[in-house]
Amino acid sequence: MIHKHFLLLYKGVPRGINQYEGVFQRTYLNIITRLITTPNTNSSEQVEFIKSATESSKSEPNWSNFKNNVLCKQGNLNEKNIDAVMLKTMVANKKFNAALSFANHLQLSNKELSIGAINSLLYLYYEYAKEYDLSEQDKAFILKTYTHLYEKYQVLDNATCERLLHALCAINEWRKCKKVLDDIQLTGTPTHSAYSTLIGTLFKNNKKAEAMKMIDISENNRRSLRDCAYDEWMKYIFRKYKDKKTVLKYLNELCTHISKNSTVVPRATANKLKESFESLNWNVQFTEIRKQSGQCKNCDLTLDCLRLSAEEFATLQQNVKDKLIVGSDLFLKTSPEELKKFMDLVENTGPYDIVLDALNVAYTAGKGGADERIRILTTVVNHFLQQKKKILLLGRKHMLNWKRGALVQLMKKTQYFFTENISQDDPYFITAAILSGPQTDIVSRDLLRGHRFLLRTDALRQLFQRWQWEHQWMVFPSTNRFRPIIQEPLKFTPIAQQHTNGWHLPYEAENTSLEYVNDGVPDVSSWLCITQKINNN
Image 1: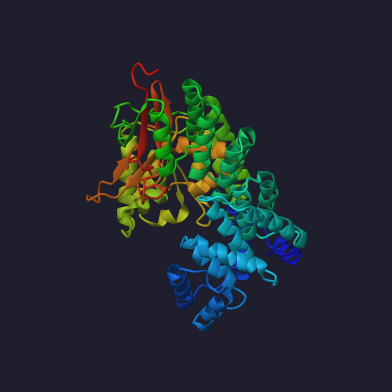
Image 2: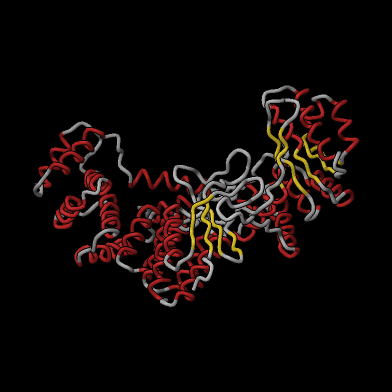
C-alpha cells in the first residue's frame, strides 16, 4: 500500500530525465510496491507442500493446523505472507474449492487481513468468476473491500488497484472501476489487462459508447486490446443485432478498428473472428502473405501500399520536427550552433531522394575494420548513384579518421553532414528525410522504435510506421562480404486491409513475438483471409 508519505516520496523523483520519461518513475514505484506487497517466494518446500496437500485432500482442511504445518517446513513463508501465498498457489493451480474454503476461513477470523491477502482474495474472485458464478457473499466482500481500502488509504498502489479493478469487473461494477483506473494513472499507465477487462465489462453491460471511449484511451496509451475485450465486443454485436447485414456492418466496424490501429490480434481473437464471419456464411481461411509481393496465398489478392496522403504527410512532417528536434532532449547532447548548421544545410541543399545513415550502414561489416566499413558504405552509395539518386550522407566526425581518401570520394558525390561524436544523429537522420519531402527514402537497419515512442499520440505513431514501411531501405551482410544485401521498402502495408470482397487481417501466431524479425519486416505468416461467398445472402 502506498500511503500519502510514499506518494510524497515518489513526487520527489525527477521528471524529464530522458526520452523515456516516466519509465524511471514507474520502475521506482514498482520496486517500492513489491517490497511492500510481494512475499519472497524462494520457499519451494513450503509451496510444494501447499500444492500437494490441496491436491490430495478430499475433505476441508483444518486451516489453522494446515498453516502451522506449512510454517514448520523450510522456506521464507511466515505469519505475515503465508495467507497471500497460499491463496495465490491454490488459484494458480485451479484449486478453487480449497481456495474458497480458505478465503472463508480468513474472512471469519478476527484478525485484520494483510494487503497481500486482500489482493490474493481479489485475484481469487476474478479468476473464479471467469468460469463460475460468484456467491452473494463473495460479491459483498469485493464491494466491502473497495469501500474499506478507500476509507483507509488516500491513494492505492498500482498492484492493489489492478486487483481491485479486475474483481470489480467480475461483478460488473464498471463505474467504480473508473475511480480505480484514475488512481493507477497517478503513477503510471494501466496494464493491457486492466483496460481490456474494463472494456469487456462495458460491452458485457451493453455500454458501447463508454467502451469505445475507453478503447480510444487504451490505444492512445499503447495498450492494444486483449482477447477478452474483442470477445465481449463480438458477443455484444451478436446479442444486440439479429439481422445478418447489421451484424456484418458492426463486425466490419470492429475490423476497421483493428486496421486503424495497425493491430495484430491475438490468435484466440482470430479464431473468434473466423467463427463470427463463418456464421454469416463467409469463407474464412488462415493464410500467409508473400513478403516480396504482398500477395495472399489463399485468394491471390495483393495487399495495397497505403501511401500517406498529402495532408497526412504534412501532419507527420510538422510533428516530427517539433517532437524530435524542438521537443526532445536533443540539446543535451548537441549545440544550437550545430543544429542550425544542419537545418540550413537541409533547407539549402534539399530535397533529397535518399537520406543514408552512414554509421549504421557501415557497421553492417560487424567486426570488420575501417577498410571493410568504407567498402560497404561505398557499395551502398554507388547502388543509389547508379539510379541517379540525390543522396544526403549523415555520419559522425570520428568516421573521418577511418580512411579519409575513400570517404572524401563519397563526399564529392553526395551532400553530407557529420555530427559531433557526442551528438544524437538519429534525430538528424529522421528529420532530414521527412523535412525533405514525401519522395525521400531512408537507408538504415535501425527500426526507429524509440522515435515512434516520442510521438505522443497513437495516430501519429501509426503515420510514422506507415511512412517507415513505405520508405525504409535496409542493408544486411551476405555470404559475399563485398556485396551486402540491399533490401527495398515493403511494396505493401502489413496491416489489416479491407478489399471489395472482404478483409485480410494479421494475427499473432502461437509461440512467436510481436517484435519484428531482423530484416525489419513484420511477421507475414499468420493472416486471416475473409471473403464473401458468391451469391451470399
